[in-house]
Amino acid sequence: MILMNDDSFMKARRRRSGPEAGDKRRRILDAAVKIFARKGYFGARVSEIAGRAGVADGTVYLYFRDKEDVLASVFEDVVAEHVAQARRELETLPPGAARLRRVAEHHLRLLGGNPDLAVVFQVELRQSTKFMERFTAASFQDYLKLIEEIIDEAQVEGSVRTDLSTKFLAKALFGILDEMVTSWILGGRDYDLGRLAAPVVDLFLNGARARATRVLARRPAARGSRS
Image (cartoon, rainbow, N blue to C red; front, side, top):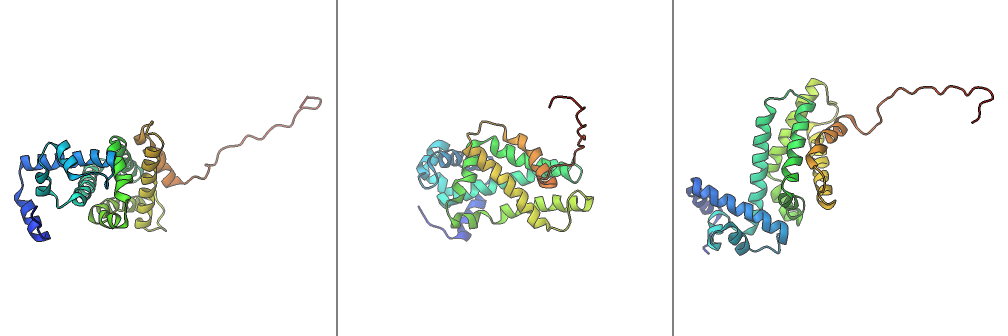
């Protein structure tokens, strides 16, 4: 394998374009999700990913520098597609709770509908600080920015308090969604994760405090009645 610096690698990657190249790259990434989920990132081999994708080992290196680049590309591609799709869907919804619910549902259904991808996101991407630093770069920031924009609109609309920053609130909502996916993975995955979007957003917007309810005063017992 010929090692290339970053500039030459990116130039070579740009030359590999077109439907066939895109299909091979997608097959490699889909295969990687399966292998990483079943064998773990450190236990997986590039040859196994290539075999499952139906390409030669060397073909993987035409699209990715190494195994770490494959894992990073899984994360970056999925998040980018998620953000783009969410933005399209949000165009038809009014500002406020409806948009927050849609983003939450999209997040939970994306991972709840693909257990292998959920394992890669919740487990394999968090194996080291090095991974986390790389994977929380541009793509993840784009996702947080989307949530911040929705919260900012909700603050203007009046459905979200304005004494907390949008960045803080966006991280808080993401943290809840993230933990719901992790709990689903560890708990057996025997329920519809997407159905939790509405209660998650309700909790985020309204908190866990009991809502005021009308309490009927208990009538005094009549004299002579048995208690």
